[in-house]
Image 1 (tube, helix red, strand yellow):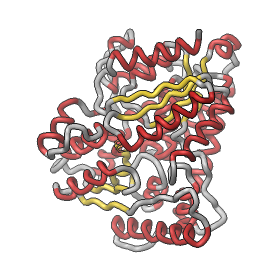
Image 2 (tube, rainbow, N blue to C red):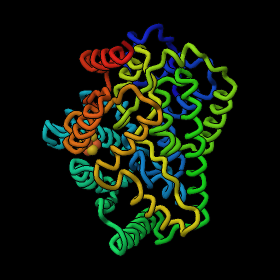
Image 3 (cartoon, rainbow, N blue to C red):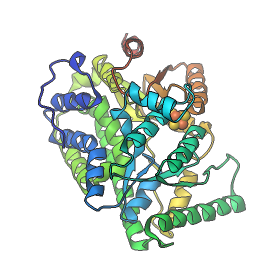
Length: 411
Ligand code: SF4
């Protein structure tokens, strides 16, 4: 586990994403649980690569969705490739553009990920990539490129449920997705089957953690500043989906966090000062944005990307996962996600919504513009940010916009 020797006095001294995490640990000096969660986040990719080299199967996959549940049941560590963003820099963009000839306007997330895989070729690290063709076209291209350059890539077919799909058509989709999961099992283990007991265990673990994280979010409403923005977004958007590759340690840290929050007295002055915000979009890799939110008095109390739907434990486990996929707001039109956002805003009495996406993502920018218009028409303040995936300090312009937005809400 990485430990930075130097102590960071001010956020302005920070020069890398790992230093933001180190700084966040300093800020949360009062909370062993938050520090453990940050440790887990910091060690997610390196720890998984170490485990792979020691003989544990591991695969690069999506950060969220059903994949981690299935992979843990197959005895494989799910390693979210999006977490490599924090190790990327401008050099990675150039590798993707010059070596792989990706067009300059391609989304920075795809270019950075491709470059990180490029740098790992021939190093004896994780060499399997599990893609899903439901996300975006640039990633579909990335799978093909990586396959040609030595990776073992499996990409499942598009998972999409249109707003009117019900009945027999929905049943066909569920069956189709079950077959796709069996394809994944065969690719990884050589056997076209998944141990039902292990899958039931993973589904139960996921449901249990969803309950625990809902509790954390409820407790944060009365302790809005206990867990700062970077720590909560990593814990929810990443950790809740894949447990940072260490499920038991993640759950133990969450249990500890709940005990800490329950035993911390409520501070009335915090409740008066807080500006409740809802975050919609990906996990921004420019960690300075979270610092800017904290400094301006904001608190990310609602996060749209977190899938809080439960998996059914009453039906066959593979079918349960397939139905979860099609019931989830991510499978379908952006209007579903907007409804989730809207209910979060109402529930938390949020004063503003921060929409975040990556430069070059035409896919998500349409949704964000639609949501922004919806909230403006409702009279709610909303900011639409575009950031870069490669690390380095966020541009002064983005930070100024974030601070000005939160301060405007406070005024
Ligand atoms: S940010 Fe957009 S274009 Fe980039 S990988 Fe994600 S969905 Fe695809």
